[in-house]
Length: 168
Image (cartoon, rainbow, N blue to C red):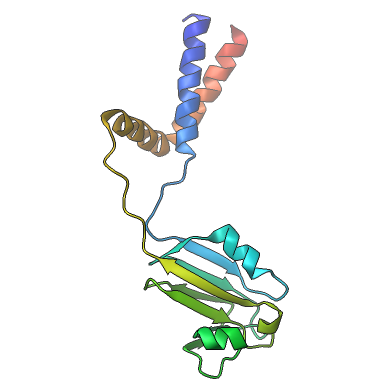
């Protein structure tokens, strides 16, 4: 096997390995929220948007020091949990599914809301699926799927080819 063909084979395996590292897209996502005081949740929203119907929010907080309270827009704006839709304060985490396309409002009723510990999350309709792939796109998708399912073997093959290249 010549140096050119070994290099081409190594390049092809590197492409397959890169495809194997790509995450698979799912309809619903799990979004982790480190729910604590002194966090700029406006910036957090910008970093984690958009949110879609059926996504899951998982709030992680310190028991006895914070809670997760779902409120309406008025309660959100006033940091008032008096007419809470839902209040969760047990344990150290709370999972909530965005099961409708609307804006959800969450606050902490331990006094941290006034310091910014609140979230207004707009759940959107999942965008329509992409058009069916062309034949070349389907073959690329098939290669990527193969690469993901055979990643350990591909990584080993790339390592062997790299060692062979050093020997040539």
